[in-house]
Amino acid sequence: MESNVNIGVIGYGYWGPNLVRNFAETPGATVRTVCDAKPELLAKAQARYPSIQVTSNCEEMFADPNIDAVAIATPVSSHFALALAALKAGKHVLVEKPMTATTEQAMRLVEEADRRNLVLMVDHTFVYTGAVRKMRELIDKDELGKIYYYDSMRVNLGIFRDVNVIWDLAAHDLSIMDYLLDAKPYGVSATGVSHISGQPENVGYLTMFFENNVIAHIHVNWLAPVKVRQTLVGGSRKMIVYNDLEPSEKVKVYDKGVTINNDPESIYQALIGYRTGDMWAPQLDMTETLRIESSHFIHCINQGERPITDGEAGMRVVKILEAATQSIKKQGRLVELDVAEMAA
Figure (cartoon, rainbow, N blue to C red):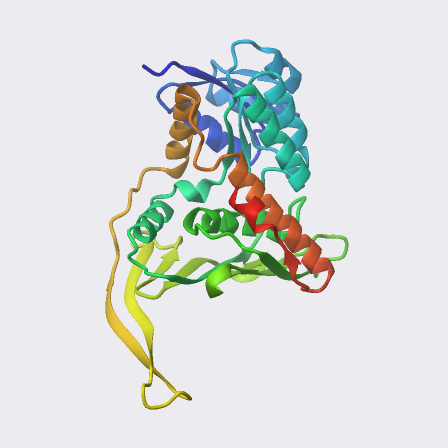
């Protein structure tokens, strides 16, 4: 029988309230304390959840022996210090994406969690959606055949944050890509630009190169007049279109593709055939994503299992983001990644 896990949540601004609500409604979890530097946010938390303790000092949370795990929903720049302090205090940790601001910091957290036998999980929310889990299921069943490409677009008239648009928006797509594709990229080329003086890049493009001629491309933009959340995964047998803004049929599978047959009569020409078949939309699990993620975190703590989006997954995303940042500074020059490290 799984024991109850007492949770402390740091940050009650944009994402924190969602974490608190879902943990409060997750069997086997109890939100004990909410921490935030702003008194007005703490007042909101206590008004909605009268039984929850509030504090502006996270050290009090770390020192509380009744708190088993800490969820961190703060700006990226604070993730490392807070997560490391929580781990050193013997708490399991769920940290918002991206995991840290540098690969070195991510590695330090992974090592600390492993040394203390604690669960370190990254809030790569989209990995837990019914849509993305269904896509992984289709790929595992070899429905798509050989994967050719991963193409994603995530744009809107967005909110400027403490990091650039790639670290903010592309982190979602990179986590999805990392979950869906077993292969890991060996190189990253990225470009980006800021149109507002003194602010980070608000438009960005990432291209990642894999072995076996697989390519991935991600377009992110804070200055788009429309909101688009679309991903295409192309294979030799079938292709998937994932539109997160669709109310029901978020995933559509197309039995379309290209077949290439060598012409036996000529070494100079190949015969290309276009295959057009049916489209179908598989049924998806519509359970709220954060509910699934919260339950998974609690389960991993009780069973001593590694989360789907563990520290290593978070670190792989940070490595790509860091390489993309270097590439942007070099106007798109390819930055190589260590494939062995990425696959570890």
